[in-house]
Length: 638
Image 1 (cartoon, rainbow, N blue to C red):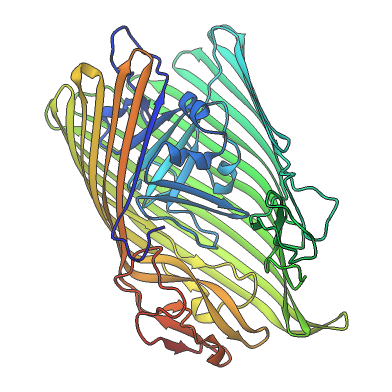
Image 2 (image 1 turned 90 degrees about the vertical axis):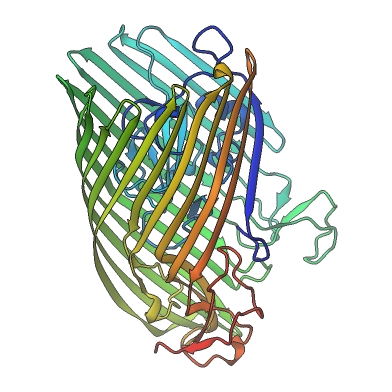
């Protein structure tokens, strides 16, 4: 996040890794990507793309996808419980709603409908592609900030191969990863089996109640990839991945030598600040199918994704030895399905195109329980949430070769989304072990979103080794309903409006010094209208008294601008140095009526919350209590 006193954020990474050359001579290997749904050299695509090989990822960092940011400055990936957030070019998501993120993730070309699934131990990979800027045409869901594409390793059809990687460390840390390919029909049909077992028991800390249960973080996953290429222009790829994750590692741990909880700790001991054991159990299975068939000068592609998942989480929310606040959330995702038909031309002298249709549907049922203590009374909240969605898309993407050096790219996408949701909440005061009903009810929300997104790109080849490009991209996201687990969100903030964005970018790509150095630069300016942001503020709730809520609001306008530079230099036959710098500046150009904490929450009447003026503030630099920009207004939505 940006600090309120800073005008910019700058990130830089320098790494060295072994490099396999494609041909003799000291030249950087050409990296092939699928940024435009076709296999192209990374230097010929008029898009800012960071390509990281699976080998570089596994050799340089761990199996945790969050470490991808170590190889891609300006990219941040966060994961805490049920909340995941990808920040790219200074813009993240962080909203509690059944909503697609601003930076989407794809695995083997298929849209990940639950982004959380991509945060669990990536292994046996071919490469990552990080596409910066709006992707509103070719991929299954328009993403206003960028896209991460993960390619898992293909089976080898000509011979058998495999590997095993083992890592061990303190506190029972053990990570085993393997992958093996077996050709069933040589040069035609092959199977690749891979898996991961990762465990870290974190035995260096304990819970306050001296529970015999040990903190644990364990991930078990397996994948089977099948690739069939019988000839006659047809090929098929099918993969199935299963993940089971169990975690009881508390994020809030104190390192102290005092006896604040009656237990003497050495400076090397750590004790959880929560008295109730954290618990998270997640499992999911997903299948991805892709079929391609060549018809003379055209390629017909069908791609499908299906997944089911479950997610249970228990959190102690007060982080004290007093058992006065905790929450459980049990989510079941059913029938997560999307598929896409594409027809594309190839090899034309003047015009290549891709056209297709997309359909997706999903459903989720959530059971939530929240306990809060108010003086001598306990308040129990039971909330059942159901959400369902259907998405439709029609798109076309054109590459028009104006001259041998100049290419014009035009693409458009029509999107229609339907969202339905319902919540059934019940609130009780607990007195002497008896629950007394004090409120609740049923709420329903149905939204429909129709929009056009698209791109216009003009690229010009200055020389065989240099290219410049300029792009204009339109993006958008639907509105919807937030998730109100505690039952404290004001009615005025229960729904939020759609978001739109317009982006302008100029870039330069080059291979210099006879292919030993690669220099890519870009500058961008992006405008978001009705930017969706989740804010937390105190409220005087009629049932729970002075408490807090997290509500999603629309900021009128947000500006994101910046520049990026990436340099790769081959020092020797097996040594390459990578350096990248990203500068991001994101701020609220206009944001009035933002829910906030003005430091005077004790004076709030029932149903009231305060609002502040955040115009001119940078994202992540919102003032804390007592630093409001203007005298807040008081909202009473009751």
